[in-house]
Length: 105
Image (cartoon, rainbow, N blue to C red; front, side, top):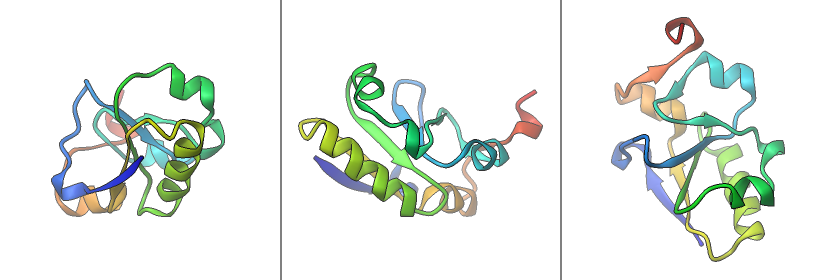
């Protein structure tokens, strides 16, 4: 099942599975805390089965995340897939912590 959650209402944490589905370059340029880079083309049954619980999905603004949520829902319609609307750009606009390669060293 796919649900939506606005980025302003989301609190990233280490105990959540958060997929940033942008390509590696955009992910490295800046992503929210605790997000793992899982480009759209890497999403498959094995990846989904390697996690438990809810899966939070975001991208830069929402387009790729929406496609990713649809794909993950097709793989396992019983899993709770949460589309984080507003994405990384929204998080940055809200002043949330953004991790970039420059400050990850």
